[in-house]
Image 1 (cartoon, rainbow, N blue to C red):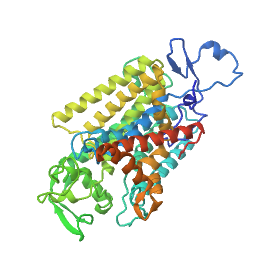
Image 2 (image 1 turned 90 degrees about the vertical axis):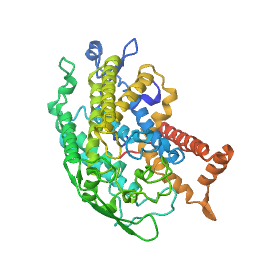
Image 3 (image 1 turned 30 degrees about the horizontal axis):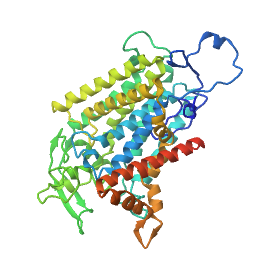
Image 4 (image 1 turned 180 degrees about the vertical axis):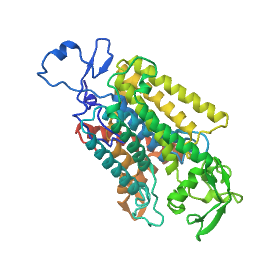
Length: 494
Protein backbone atom coordinates (compact mmCIF):
# COMPACT_ATOMS: atom_id res chain seq x y z
CA UNK A 1 0.00 0.00 0.00
CA UNK A 2 1.67 3.28 -1.02
CA UNK A 3 1.83 6.46 1.02
CA UNK A 4 -1.16 8.05 -0.68
CA UNK A 5 -3.58 5.52 0.80
CA UNK A 6 -2.72 6.03 4.45
CA UNK A 7 -5.22 8.71 5.30
CA UNK A 8 -8.64 7.36 6.19
CA UNK A 9 -12.00 8.54 4.81
CA UNK A 10 -12.12 11.07 7.55
CA UNK A 11 -12.32 14.67 6.88
CA UNK A 12 -14.85 17.32 6.29
CA UNK A 13 -12.44 18.46 3.63
CA UNK A 14 -14.99 21.05 2.51
CA UNK A 15 -13.60 20.65 -0.99
CA UNK A 16 -10.51 22.56 0.10
CA UNK A 17 -9.06 19.99 2.59
CA UNK A 18 -10.40 22.12 5.41
CA UNK A 19 -10.59 19.11 7.68
CA UNK A 20 -9.37 17.71 10.93
CA UNK A 21 -9.17 13.93 10.89
CA UNK A 22 -11.52 12.43 13.42
CA UNK A 23 -9.76 9.13 13.96
CA UNK A 24 -12.10 8.09 16.72
CA UNK A 25 -15.01 8.35 14.29
CA UNK A 26 -13.44 6.52 11.38
CA UNK A 27 -11.39 3.58 12.67
CA UNK A 28 -13.26 0.93 10.70
CA UNK A 29 -11.03 -1.30 8.65
CA UNK A 30 -11.14 -2.06 4.95
CA UNK A 31 -10.20 -5.49 3.68
CA UNK A 32 -9.60 -6.36 0.09
CA UNK A 33 -10.80 -9.65 -1.34
CA UNK A 34 -9.03 -11.75 -3.93
CA UNK A 35 -10.63 -10.14 -6.98
CA UNK A 36 -9.66 -6.65 -5.82
CA UNK A 37 -13.09 -5.40 -4.72
CA UNK A 38 -12.81 -3.38 -1.52
CA UNK A 39 -15.41 -3.24 1.24
CA UNK A 40 -15.47 -0.55 3.89
CA UNK A 41 -16.38 -1.45 7.49
CA UNK A 42 -16.60 -5.10 6.54
CA UNK A 43 -14.57 -7.83 8.29
CA UNK A 44 -14.75 -11.54 7.88
CA UNK A 45 -15.92 -13.50 10.90
CA UNK A 46 -12.55 -15.12 11.53
CA UNK A 47 -10.81 -11.78 11.82
CA UNK A 48 -13.46 -10.47 14.20
CA UNK A 49 -13.23 -13.57 16.37
CA UNK A 50 -9.47 -13.15 16.95
CA UNK A 51 -8.02 -10.46 19.18
CA UNK A 52 -6.35 -7.66 17.29
CA UNK A 53 -2.66 -7.96 18.24
CA UNK A 54 -1.45 -5.52 15.59
CA UNK A 55 -3.22 -2.34 14.58
CA UNK A 56 -3.99 -2.57 10.90
CA UNK A 57 -3.50 0.35 8.58
CA UNK A 58 -6.58 2.08 7.31
CA UNK A 59 -7.28 3.03 3.75
CA UNK A 60 -8.73 6.15 2.20
CA UNK A 61 -10.69 6.25 -1.05
CA UNK A 62 -8.11 8.03 -3.21
CA UNK A 63 -10.76 9.38 -5.57
CA UNK A 64 -11.83 11.88 -2.91
CA UNK A 65 -8.47 13.64 -2.97
CA UNK A 66 -8.07 13.32 -6.73
CA UNK A 67 -11.47 14.90 -7.39
CA UNK A 68 -10.75 17.72 -4.96
CA UNK A 69 -7.37 18.26 -6.59
CA UNK A 70 -8.94 18.26 -10.05
CA UNK A 71 -11.33 21.00 -8.93
CA UNK A 72 -8.46 23.16 -7.65
CA UNK A 73 -6.56 22.61 -10.91
CA UNK A 74 -9.60 23.64 -12.94
CA UNK A 75 -9.94 26.79 -10.85
CA UNK A 76 -6.31 27.80 -11.44
CA UNK A 77 -6.63 27.06 -15.16
CA UNK A 78 -9.80 29.05 -15.81
CA UNK A 79 -8.87 31.93 -13.51
CA UNK A 80 -5.41 32.52 -14.94
CA UNK A 81 -5.91 31.40 -18.55
CA UNK A 82 -9.54 32.46 -18.94
CA UNK A 83 -8.65 35.97 -20.12
CA UNK A 84 -6.57 34.53 -22.97
CA UNK A 85 -9.21 31.86 -23.73
CA UNK A 86 -12.65 33.41 -23.01
CA UNK A 87 -14.42 30.22 -24.09
CA UNK A 88 -13.27 28.47 -20.90
CA UNK A 89 -14.05 31.46 -18.67
CA UNK A 90 -17.44 31.83 -16.97
CA UNK A 91 -20.40 32.05 -19.30
CA UNK A 92 -21.56 35.70 -19.51
CA UNK A 93 -25.09 34.56 -18.68
CA UNK A 94 -26.97 31.47 -19.88
CA UNK A 95 -24.93 28.38 -20.73
CA UNK A 96 -22.12 26.47 -19.06
CA UNK A 97 -18.37 26.63 -19.67
CA UNK A 98 -15.42 24.88 -18.04
CA UNK A 99 -15.16 27.58 -15.36
CA UNK A 100 -18.80 27.10 -14.39
CA UNK A 101 -18.10 23.57 -13.13
CA UNK A 102 -15.64 24.68 -10.45
CA UNK A 103 -18.00 25.93 -7.72
CA UNK A 104 -20.53 23.05 -7.90
CA UNK A 105 -17.65 20.55 -8.00
CA UNK A 106 -16.37 22.08 -4.75
CA UNK A 107 -19.80 21.78 -3.14
CA UNK A 108 -20.28 18.24 -4.43
CA UNK A 109 -17.08 17.02 -2.78
CA UNK A 110 -18.04 18.92 0.38
CA UNK A 111 -21.13 16.74 0.58
CA UNK A 112 -19.22 13.50 -0.07
CA UNK A 113 -16.65 14.34 2.61
CA UNK A 114 -19.31 15.30 5.17
CA UNK A 115 -21.04 11.93 4.80
CA UNK A 116 -17.79 10.08 5.49
CA UNK A 117 -16.67 12.33 8.33
CA UNK A 118 -19.99 12.18 10.17
CA UNK A 119 -20.98 8.56 9.70
CA UNK A 120 -20.21 8.03 13.41
CA UNK A 121 -20.91 10.87 15.86
CA UNK A 122 -20.09 9.99 19.49
CA UNK A 123 -20.83 13.49 20.79
CA UNK A 124 -23.41 15.59 18.94
CA UNK A 125 -22.73 18.79 20.90
CA UNK A 126 -19.01 18.56 20.18
CA UNK A 127 -19.69 17.91 16.48
CA UNK A 128 -22.01 20.93 16.25
CA UNK A 129 -19.39 23.10 17.95
CA UNK A 130 -16.74 21.99 15.44
CA UNK A 131 -19.08 22.65 12.51
CA UNK A 132 -19.87 26.18 13.68
CA UNK A 133 -16.20 26.93 14.35
CA UNK A 134 -15.11 25.67 10.95
CA UNK A 135 -17.89 27.69 9.30
CA UNK A 136 -16.66 30.88 11.00
CA UNK A 137 -13.10 30.17 9.89
CA UNK A 138 -14.26 29.78 6.30
CA UNK A 139 -16.20 33.03 6.47
CA UNK A 140 -13.17 34.86 7.88
CA UNK A 141 -10.80 33.63 5.19
CA UNK A 142 -13.37 34.30 2.50
CA UNK A 143 -13.73 37.95 3.47
CA UNK A 144 -9.94 38.40 3.77
CA UNK A 145 -9.23 36.84 0.37
CA UNK A 146 -12.20 38.06 -1.69
CA UNK A 147 -13.68 40.93 0.29
CA UNK A 148 -11.29 43.45 -1.21
CA UNK A 149 -8.63 43.41 1.51
CA UNK A 150 -6.22 41.37 -0.60
CA UNK A 151 -5.29 42.80 -4.01
CA UNK A 152 -3.09 39.86 -5.00
CA UNK A 153 -1.37 39.11 -7.25
CA UNK A 154 -1.15 42.21 -9.45
CA UNK A 155 -1.41 45.09 -6.99
CA UNK A 156 1.19 45.35 -4.25
CA UNK A 157 -1.13 46.71 -1.60
CA UNK A 158 -3.71 45.62 0.90
CA UNK A 159 -6.72 47.15 2.60
CA UNK A 160 -10.33 47.80 1.71
CA UNK A 161 -12.72 50.72 2.01
CA UNK A 162 -15.46 49.35 4.25
CA UNK A 163 -17.98 51.29 2.18
CA UNK A 164 -17.26 48.88 -0.67
CA UNK A 165 -16.23 45.66 1.07
CA UNK A 166 -17.58 42.53 -0.63
CA UNK A 167 -19.30 40.26 1.86
CA UNK A 168 -19.85 37.25 -0.41
CA UNK A 169 -17.41 34.95 -2.18
CA UNK A 170 -16.32 31.38 -2.86
CA UNK A 171 -15.41 30.38 0.69
CA UNK A 172 -18.48 32.14 2.08
CA UNK A 173 -20.74 30.05 -0.15
CA UNK A 174 -18.88 26.89 0.80
CA UNK A 175 -19.27 27.87 4.46
CA UNK A 176 -23.05 28.24 4.15
CA UNK A 177 -23.54 24.97 2.28
CA UNK A 178 -21.18 23.12 4.59
CA UNK A 179 -22.87 24.46 7.72
CA UNK A 180 -26.41 23.58 6.62
CA UNK A 181 -25.63 20.13 5.21
CA UNK A 182 -23.31 19.14 8.08
CA UNK A 183 -25.77 20.29 10.76
CA UNK A 184 -28.60 18.29 9.18
CA UNK A 185 -26.34 15.23 9.00
CA UNK A 186 -25.30 15.67 12.63
CA UNK A 187 -28.68 16.43 14.17
CA UNK A 188 -30.36 13.49 12.41
CA UNK A 189 -27.67 10.96 13.32
CA UNK A 190 -30.01 9.00 15.62
CA UNK A 191 -32.69 8.83 12.93
CA UNK A 192 -30.63 7.15 10.24
CA UNK A 193 -30.17 3.38 9.96
CA UNK A 194 -26.90 1.48 10.20
CA UNK A 195 -28.02 -0.88 7.44
CA UNK A 196 -30.36 -0.32 4.52
CA UNK A 197 -33.66 -2.08 4.06
CA UNK A 198 -34.29 -3.81 0.71
CA UNK A 199 -35.53 -1.68 -2.15
CA UNK A 200 -34.24 0.66 -4.83
CA UNK A 201 -35.22 3.80 -2.94
CA UNK A 202 -33.93 2.62 0.44
CA UNK A 203 -30.85 4.82 0.24
CA UNK A 204 -33.11 7.84 -0.29
CA UNK A 205 -35.65 7.04 2.42
CA UNK A 206 -32.89 6.28 4.92
CA UNK A 207 -31.69 9.87 4.62
CA UNK A 208 -35.01 11.56 4.05
CA UNK A 209 -34.16 14.49 6.32
CA UNK A 210 -31.16 15.42 4.20
CA UNK A 211 -33.34 15.42 1.10
CA UNK A 212 -36.02 17.34 2.99
CA UNK A 213 -33.46 20.05 3.77
CA UNK A 214 -32.49 20.21 0.12
CA UNK A 215 -36.15 20.40 -0.88
CA UNK A 216 -36.74 23.33 1.51
CA UNK A 217 -33.78 25.15 -0.05
CA UNK A 218 -35.23 24.42 -3.49
CA UNK A 219 -38.66 25.79 -2.50
CA UNK A 220 -37.20 28.97 -1.02
CA UNK A 221 -35.19 29.58 -4.18
CA UNK A 222 -37.93 28.79 -6.70
CA UNK A 223 -40.71 30.71 -4.92
CA UNK A 224 -38.50 33.76 -4.39
CA UNK A 225 -37.11 33.71 -7.93
CA UNK A 226 -40.47 33.57 -9.65
CA UNK A 227 -42.78 35.32 -7.18
CA UNK A 228 -40.74 38.22 -5.81
CA UNK A 229 -41.52 41.60 -7.36
CA UNK A 230 -38.39 43.40 -8.62
CA UNK A 231 -38.85 47.20 -8.76
CA UNK A 232 -36.74 49.75 -10.60
CA UNK A 233 -33.33 50.23 -9.03
CA UNK A 234 -30.36 52.54 -9.29
CA UNK A 235 -26.62 52.40 -8.70
CA UNK A 236 -23.60 54.69 -8.83
CA UNK A 237 -20.78 53.58 -11.14
CA UNK A 238 -17.51 54.08 -9.24
CA UNK A 239 -15.39 51.87 -11.53
CA UNK A 240 -15.78 53.13 -15.09
CA UNK A 241 -14.76 56.69 -15.78
CA UNK A 242 -13.14 59.31 -13.59
CA UNK A 243 -16.33 60.71 -12.11
CA UNK A 244 -18.95 58.55 -10.33
CA UNK A 245 -22.24 58.52 -12.24
CA UNK A 246 -25.70 57.35 -11.21
CA UNK A 247 -27.80 55.10 -13.44
CA UNK A 248 -31.34 53.75 -13.12
CA UNK A 249 -32.45 50.31 -14.31
CA UNK A 250 -36.14 49.94 -15.18
CA UNK A 251 -37.72 46.68 -14.04
CA UNK A 252 -41.12 46.37 -12.34
CA UNK A 253 -41.46 42.63 -13.11
CA UNK A 254 -41.71 39.19 -11.52
CA UNK A 255 -40.01 35.98 -12.59
CA UNK A 256 -37.50 37.61 -14.93
CA UNK A 257 -34.35 35.54 -15.52
CA UNK A 258 -32.37 38.17 -17.40
CA UNK A 259 -29.33 40.05 -16.04
CA UNK A 260 -31.05 43.29 -15.05
CA UNK A 261 -34.26 42.37 -13.26
CA UNK A 262 -33.90 38.94 -11.67
CA UNK A 263 -34.85 38.30 -8.05
CA UNK A 264 -31.42 36.86 -7.22
CA UNK A 265 -29.74 40.21 -7.79
CA UNK A 266 -32.57 42.11 -6.11
CA UNK A 267 -32.23 40.08 -2.88
CA UNK A 268 -28.49 40.83 -2.74
CA UNK A 269 -29.02 44.52 -3.34
CA UNK A 270 -31.53 44.63 -0.49
CA UNK A 271 -29.57 42.47 1.95
CA UNK A 272 -25.97 43.54 1.32
CA UNK A 273 -26.36 46.87 -0.47
CA UNK A 274 -25.39 47.57 -4.08
CA UNK A 275 -21.95 48.91 -3.10
CA UNK A 276 -20.99 45.59 -1.49
CA UNK A 277 -21.51 43.42 -4.57
CA UNK A 278 -18.91 42.17 -7.06
CA UNK A 279 -17.96 45.13 -9.26
CA UNK A 280 -16.76 43.16 -12.32
CA UNK A 281 -19.61 40.73 -13.17
CA UNK A 282 -19.15 38.42 -16.15
CA UNK A 283 -22.26 39.80 -17.88
CA UNK A 284 -20.02 42.69 -19.03
CA UNK A 285 -18.86 40.29 -21.76
CA UNK A 286 -22.36 39.86 -23.23
CA UNK A 287 -23.00 40.96 -26.82
CA UNK A 288 -25.37 43.60 -25.49
CA UNK A 289 -22.49 45.16 -23.53
CA UNK A 290 -19.40 44.80 -25.74
CA UNK A 291 -18.34 44.01 -29.30
CA UNK A 292 -15.51 41.87 -27.84
CA UNK A 293 -17.91 39.02 -26.91
CA UNK A 294 -17.16 36.44 -25.54
CA UNK A 295 -14.13 38.32 -24.22
CA UNK A 296 -14.05 41.51 -22.22
CA UNK A 297 -13.55 44.83 -23.98
CA UNK A 298 -14.73 48.38 -24.37
CA UNK A 299 -18.43 48.94 -23.71
CA UNK A 300 -20.69 49.60 -26.66
CA UNK A 301 -22.07 53.12 -26.99
CA UNK A 302 -25.59 51.70 -26.93
CA UNK A 303 -24.93 49.29 -24.04
CA UNK A 304 -27.75 49.21 -21.47
CA UNK A 305 -26.97 50.80 -18.13
CA UNK A 306 -27.02 47.50 -16.21
CA UNK A 307 -23.83 46.48 -18.07
CA UNK A 308 -21.98 48.87 -15.72
CA UNK A 309 -23.74 47.66 -12.57
CA UNK A 310 -22.29 45.38 -9.88
CA UNK A 311 -23.70 41.88 -9.38
CA UNK A 312 -22.92 39.19 -6.82
CA UNK A 313 -22.32 35.73 -8.39
CA UNK A 314 -22.04 34.14 -4.91
CA UNK A 315 -25.04 35.92 -3.42
CA UNK A 316 -27.52 34.88 -0.75
CA UNK A 317 -30.41 33.44 -2.77
CA UNK A 318 -28.14 31.66 -5.24
CA UNK A 319 -26.20 30.18 -2.30
CA UNK A 320 -29.44 28.80 -0.89
CA UNK A 321 -29.90 27.03 -4.22
CA UNK A 322 -26.30 25.81 -3.96
CA UNK A 323 -27.28 23.78 -0.88
CA UNK A 324 -28.73 21.30 -3.39
CA UNK A 325 -25.24 20.67 -4.77
CA UNK A 326 -24.04 19.72 -1.29
CA UNK A 327 -27.13 17.58 -0.74
CA UNK A 328 -26.46 15.58 -3.91
CA UNK A 329 -22.81 15.23 -2.89
CA UNK A 330 -23.72 13.84 0.53
CA UNK A 331 -25.94 11.27 -1.21
CA UNK A 332 -22.89 10.03 -3.13
CA UNK A 333 -21.07 9.76 0.20
CA UNK A 334 -23.93 7.73 1.68
CA UNK A 335 -23.74 5.36 -1.28
CA UNK A 336 -20.01 4.95 -0.63
CA UNK A 337 -20.74 4.03 2.99
CA UNK A 338 -23.63 1.60 2.51
CA UNK A 339 -22.77 -0.14 -0.78
CA UNK A 340 -19.66 -2.28 -0.48
CA UNK A 341 -19.07 -3.50 -4.05
CA UNK A 342 -17.63 -1.37 -6.81
CA UNK A 343 -20.40 -2.29 -9.24
CA UNK A 344 -23.14 -1.41 -6.74
CA UNK A 345 -21.63 1.99 -6.04
CA UNK A 346 -21.08 2.79 -9.70
CA UNK A 347 -24.62 1.74 -10.59
CA UNK A 348 -26.03 4.17 -8.02
CA UNK A 349 -23.66 7.01 -8.93
CA UNK A 350 -23.86 6.80 -12.70
CA UNK A 351 -27.63 6.32 -12.86
CA UNK A 352 -28.20 9.41 -10.75
CA UNK A 353 -25.61 11.37 -12.70
CA UNK A 354 -27.23 10.68 -16.05
CA UNK A 355 -30.74 11.34 -14.71
CA UNK A 356 -29.62 14.75 -13.45
CA UNK A 357 -28.02 15.55 -16.81
CA UNK A 358 -31.21 14.63 -18.68
CA UNK A 359 -33.34 16.81 -16.36
CA UNK A 360 -30.99 19.75 -16.87
CA UNK A 361 -30.92 19.40 -20.65
CA UNK A 362 -34.72 19.21 -20.85
CA UNK A 363 -35.16 22.28 -18.63
CA UNK A 364 -32.58 24.26 -20.58
CA UNK A 365 -33.57 23.48 -24.15
CA UNK A 366 -37.29 23.86 -23.48
CA UNK A 367 -36.51 27.34 -22.14
CA UNK A 368 -38.25 26.43 -18.89
CA UNK A 369 -35.23 27.13 -16.67
CA UNK A 370 -31.97 27.90 -18.50
CA UNK A 371 -28.62 26.66 -17.23
CA UNK A 372 -27.18 29.72 -15.51
CA UNK A 373 -24.32 29.88 -13.02
CA UNK A 374 -24.95 33.49 -12.01
CA UNK A 375 -28.49 32.60 -10.92
CA UNK A 376 -27.49 29.10 -9.75
CA UNK A 377 -30.62 27.86 -11.48
CA UNK A 378 -32.16 24.43 -10.92
CA UNK A 379 -31.02 23.25 -14.35
CA UNK A 380 -27.50 24.43 -13.50
CA UNK A 381 -27.60 22.47 -10.24
CA UNK A 382 -28.70 19.31 -12.05
CA UNK A 383 -26.27 19.70 -14.96
CA UNK A 384 -23.18 20.34 -12.86
CA UNK A 385 -24.07 17.80 -10.16
CA UNK A 386 -24.70 15.17 -12.82
CA UNK A 387 -21.35 15.98 -14.42
CA UNK A 388 -19.66 15.84 -11.01
CA UNK A 389 -21.16 12.43 -10.33
CA UNK A 390 -19.98 11.06 -13.67
CA UNK A 391 -16.45 12.51 -13.31
CA UNK A 392 -16.26 11.18 -9.74
CA UNK A 393 -17.33 7.75 -10.99
CA UNK A 394 -14.76 7.82 -13.81
CA UNK A 395 -11.96 8.68 -11.37
CA UNK A 396 -13.18 5.96 -9.02
CA UNK A 397 -12.99 3.38 -11.82
CA UNK A 398 -9.49 4.43 -12.84
CA UNK A 399 -7.97 4.97 -9.40
CA UNK A 400 -9.77 2.78 -6.87
CA UNK A 401 -11.03 -0.04 -9.08
CA UNK A 402 -8.30 -0.41 -11.70
CA UNK A 403 -5.53 0.86 -9.45
CA UNK A 404 -4.17 3.36 -11.99
CA UNK A 405 -2.92 5.87 -9.43
CA UNK A 406 0.41 7.16 -10.70
CA UNK A 407 -0.96 9.58 -13.36
CA UNK A 408 -3.31 11.07 -10.77
CA UNK A 409 -0.92 11.34 -7.83
CA UNK A 410 -0.39 15.06 -8.36
CA UNK A 411 -4.17 15.55 -8.13
CA UNK A 412 -4.24 13.58 -4.89
CA UNK A 413 -1.40 15.65 -3.44
CA UNK A 414 -3.12 18.90 -4.35
CA UNK A 415 -6.41 17.56 -2.98
CA UNK A 416 -4.77 16.68 0.36
CA UNK A 417 -3.46 20.25 0.70
CA UNK A 418 -6.24 21.96 -1.20
CA UNK A 419 -6.61 24.92 1.18
CA UNK A 420 -2.93 25.79 0.81
CA UNK A 421 -3.01 25.59 -2.99
CA UNK A 422 -6.29 27.51 -3.13
CA UNK A 423 -4.88 30.41 -1.12
CA UNK A 424 -1.36 30.48 -2.55
CA UNK A 425 -2.11 29.70 -6.19
CA UNK A 426 -5.78 30.28 -7.01
CA UNK A 427 -5.93 33.48 -4.93
CA UNK A 428 -2.47 34.61 -6.05
CA UNK A 429 -0.95 35.12 -2.59
CA UNK A 430 2.37 33.44 -3.44
CA UNK A 431 2.65 35.27 -6.77
CA UNK A 432 1.99 38.55 -4.96
CA UNK A 433 4.75 37.75 -2.49
CA UNK A 434 7.21 37.12 -5.34
CA UNK A 435 6.02 40.23 -7.18
CA UNK A 436 6.87 42.23 -4.08
CA UNK A 437 10.55 41.71 -4.85
CA UNK A 438 11.03 43.70 -8.04
CA UNK A 439 13.77 45.75 -9.74
CA UNK A 440 13.03 49.43 -10.46
CA UNK A 441 9.44 48.73 -11.55
CA UNK A 442 6.75 46.34 -10.16
CA UNK A 443 6.44 44.82 -13.65
CA UNK A 444 10.07 43.72 -13.43
CA UNK A 445 9.63 40.86 -11.00
CA UNK A 446 10.54 37.19 -11.28
CA UNK A 447 6.95 36.17 -12.05
CA UNK A 448 6.61 38.66 -14.89
CA UNK A 449 10.07 37.77 -16.24
CA UNK A 450 9.37 34.02 -16.31
CA UNK A 451 6.00 34.47 -17.99
CA UNK A 452 7.36 36.85 -20.63
CA UNK A 453 10.77 35.36 -21.47
CA UNK A 454 10.29 31.65 -20.74
CA UNK A 455 6.81 31.22 -22.16
CA UNK A 456 5.32 34.11 -24.17
CA UNK A 457 8.43 35.13 -26.12
CA UNK A 458 9.57 31.55 -26.74
CA UNK A 459 6.24 30.61 -28.30
CA UNK A 460 5.73 34.06 -29.84
CA UNK A 461 2.11 33.96 -28.68
CA UNK A 462 0.41 35.59 -25.73
CA UNK A 463 -2.34 32.97 -25.66
CA UNK A 464 -0.14 29.88 -25.94
CA UNK A 465 2.48 31.35 -23.61
CA UNK A 466 -0.15 32.15 -20.98
CA UNK A 467 -1.61 28.65 -21.16
CA UNK A 468 1.80 26.98 -20.83
CA UNK A 469 2.74 29.29 -17.99
CA UNK A 470 -0.41 28.29 -16.09
CA UNK A 471 0.17 24.57 -16.75
CA UNK A 472 3.85 24.45 -15.83
CA UNK A 473 4.65 27.46 -13.62
CA UNK A 474 1.45 27.20 -11.58
CA UNK A 475 -0.30 23.81 -11.75
CA UNK A 476 2.82 21.65 -12.10
CA UNK A 477 4.76 23.75 -9.60
CA UNK A 478 2.08 23.49 -6.94
CA UNK A 479 1.61 19.80 -7.68
CA UNK A 480 5.28 19.26 -6.81
CA UNK A 481 5.04 21.48 -3.71
CA UNK A 482 1.95 19.60 -2.53
CA UNK A 483 3.73 16.29 -3.13
CA UNK A 484 6.71 17.35 -1.03
CA UNK A 485 4.44 18.57 1.75
CA UNK A 486 2.57 15.26 1.64
CA UNK A 487 5.80 13.32 2.05
CA UNK A 488 6.60 15.54 5.03
CA UNK A 489 3.05 15.03 6.33
CA UNK A 490 2.39 18.78 6.37
CA UNK A 491 -1.22 19.78 5.72
CA UNK A 492 -3.01 23.11 6.16
CA UNK A 493 -6.31 22.44 7.87
CA UNK A 494 -8.87 24.73 9.45
